[in-house]
Amino acid sequence: MRTENVLVEQKRFSYARPAGPLWRSVVHQIWLWILVLPGAALFLTPWVWMLMTAGKEKSLIWKIPPVWIPPTYRWANYVEAWLKGDFITFFSNTAFVASLNVVAVLVSCSIAAFAFARIQFPGRTTLFVIVLSTMMLPMQVTLIPLFMIFSWLEWVNTFKPLVVPLFFGDAFSIFLLRQFFLTIPRELDDAALIDGCSRFAVFWRILLFQVRPALIVVAIYQFTYSWNDFFAPLIYINSPQLFTITPGAEPLQRAHGGRYPVPDGDDGRLDPRANRHLLRDPAHIPAGDCDHGNQRIDSMSEERKKEQLKMIWPEQLLGSPPAVHVPIGYTLRTYRPGDEEGWYEVMDLAGFTRWNYEMLEPWLSHILPEGWFLIEHRASNKIVASAMANHRPQDIHPFGGELGWVAGDPEHKGKGLGMAVCAAVMRRLLAGGYKNIFLNTDDWRLPALSIYLRLGWIPLLYLPDMEERWRDVCANLDWPFTPKEWPEGHTESS
Image 1 (cartoon, rainbow, N blue to C red):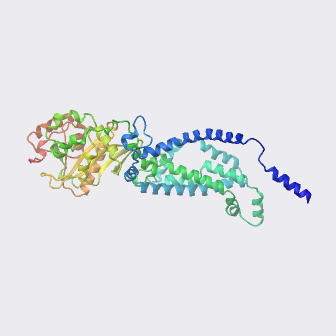
Image 2 (cartoon, rainbow, N blue to C red):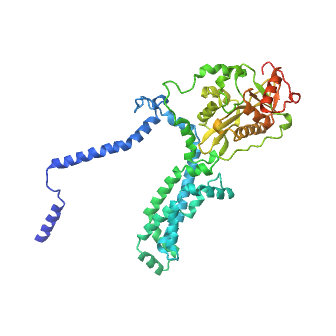
């Protein structure tokens, strides 16, 4: 009994705190906090800045010195950002693809890892080294062969290129699971085989439960990678309704995230009130097209004093919509919320330098449903061409459909983008049953005039001086001048 008491006393004293001054422990804790807190603050600073900036007014974002805490946190920024993109679709697509990828990786890689770890077969080590060596190949190396294969299989613009390859395994996941399988004693396999289990039963009933921590790690890695993947959806997906969150949100970020400082109260554009006379007087609205920015609209004050040229779509072509040919590397699509900033930029590059939402809003009521066409450069996600199918009744066109606001980025000139976007608008107008289809343009927009003439448009000689002006246009374009074949029309309000 005495011996037991001694052992209990020794055990009790063995857990006692070593003797020493209390101030040493306090100083140790203080120094620990002094070292840890600055590091924590350093890592939290970007996150705090992001959170505070998300609720700022635009004028405060670039203010110098920086405003860390806005006077009023603008919660409406979150609502506006959400409404500018189809984020419900983007999140649904991303969750669908990421979930399928997790299932694909867990099924294929666990089976492959089990085979490499537990089954003896000729060439096992060599094959495993080959699998590991594929990790050294960047995705860009296999991009073109894979794209050609998927194009041949007609899988482009579907989710299949994003999901199906993972059902054939992932080298890193196979390696991780194989190493975990090797830590499990082989005696479990032997006991199960003696009891009559098949190889698959050993894998499915016994070992798979032993590697659950590794499976969770693989699932987290794969889900995170699939959710954040930008490159593969950008290459294989063309339709906005199939976009995942990264390519879907990128146009919004591009339109609103890369702004440089502007003076307080100035959004970088001229006061829209100075341009309201343009909206009131249709005769001064350049509603036709642009010449890809070869001449700026500000230098065309003399041309604006002239009545615009008019062209009409001939009656004999009402049943023959033009074909749309979009060059490789570009995507033709219709407008979606959030495209306004990108459209302002391409309009500015094309020569229409004063556009903002106040000027655009009156035109929105004229655009036909699915009638605002945009061409997007896939490599940069920039809008590089645009045109609108408008409902625009006029005296000489009582049920008038208009090809309006054709614009293009001069950096992408010569690729047929203007022809493609104009043809798309024409097909929309003809599908809408329009018989009187017209456009307004100017003498100096020669590249655009060349597109219209090649598509089949014919001039409308609605003013006495039109014949002479078209003579100059045709001479500059080396186009046949045949005024006897062109219709005439006269109206005071045209």
